Structure formats: structure tokens, C-alpha cells
Length: 104
Image (cartoon, rainbow, N blue to C red; front, top):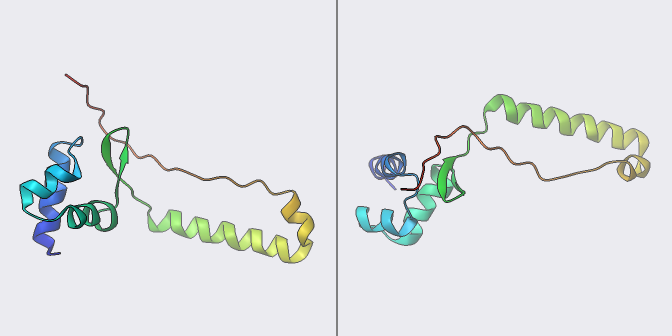
């Protein structure tokens, strides 16, 4: 996809965060799959409560995750399976600032 098309998709979402993939595809005369790919994979927008919200994982946050993994791996190498038995994991979700829109 061209940078111009990606910018057009981003502009549509910024204009109306409640827009559907179908509406974007129709406005830009592209397939549903292409519109979804641009939104989700290229621009990294995710649907949160019926709105498209950008997912932004900065280089610093990525580095902190890698450092945390390395520290946990060192402890596993030292303590073995006993360490895993005391470890609690969970899925983490990052929600970034966005302007909520009220339904009219």
C-alpha cells in the first residue's frame, strides 16, 4: 500500500474514531482486507469500545520488557522449576490517551 493511501486511512480514523472498516474501504475504494490490514497491521490501531485507538509501544518500553525478560531468565537458570512455581503471569493491556466521543 502506498504511503498516500495509509495517510488517507489515518485521516479518516482521526476524523471519526467510530468508523468501520467497511466504511473506510468504501470511501477509499479498496478491499475490506486491505483496509483492515492498513488499520490493524500498518497503523497498529485496535478497536477499543467501538473506537480505533493507536497502539504505541515506544523503544524504551520495548527495552524495559527485554530487560525484565533477561532478569527473569537469569532467575530461572539459577533457581530452576522452583522459580516457575512461584511465578504469576498475566496478559497486559496498554490503553493510551484518547478523546472519548459521546453518542448523540
